[in-house]
Image (cartoon, rainbow, N blue to C red):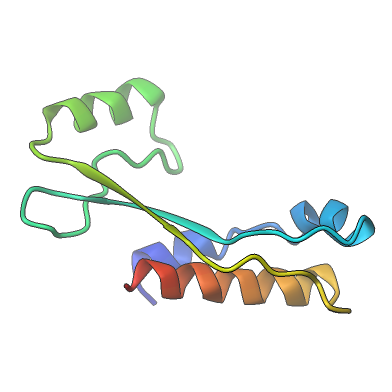
Length: 99
């Protein structure tokens, strides 16, 4: 499992409960950062024990960081429970990041 996939495993199914309750769609969105060579960069990431200051410092010291935002198609629960829907959303986000 790639690092971005293990981080994404923390997607919380309970965040989808409100959308299920009111039959609202959600839209998967993937955010990733690329360095000057077009490779994935974790410099701007704010993960685990990272501090905000540390994240900002790494970002400012990195050359050519680009933020890439990818949008998936809006979707509704269509009878799925929140855990099943969260798993599907997670897979959609992973696929968006591989584009």
